[in-house]
Image (tube, rainbow, N blue to C red; front, side, top):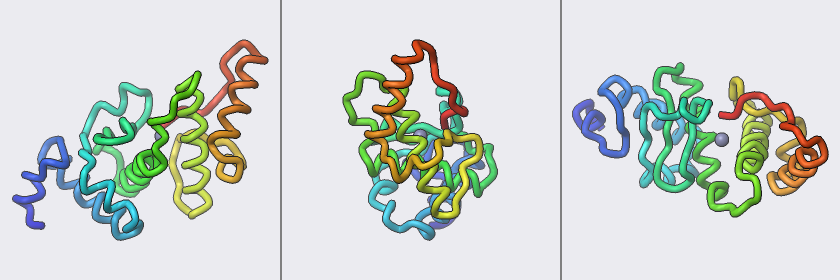
Length: 159
Ligand SMILES: [Zn+2]
């Protein structure tokens, strides 16, 4: 893909600079993890908007990934993988009582998986053993804990 094609790529939304950076990060991610190529064939990546959710990346679980292209490239690759994992696992389709807690549970599982694979998400949700526990069980534990405590459990910032 030449520079003109990258800038005109409708699957990436942002300034020309942001598009180039996201394109490069996407290529690096697909080189590292080719299994996500089916996701990035259809998903739109949008620069900006992620900060409204208090993090640096988010997805609707189907059609769009929002992120901040201002972060360094290595982090951008990891955030894109994190969001792709949400889509792969269909995390956003889950009908749960407390979606915020479900999101924390799935973030913890994904980040723990990535950590186990030697990747590192800065400032993401960290719960030890989350990957081996699985999102369902972790979510149930968090919900029980929340109801028992009648106050918000403490977490690190979600991404
Ligand atoms: Zn997430």
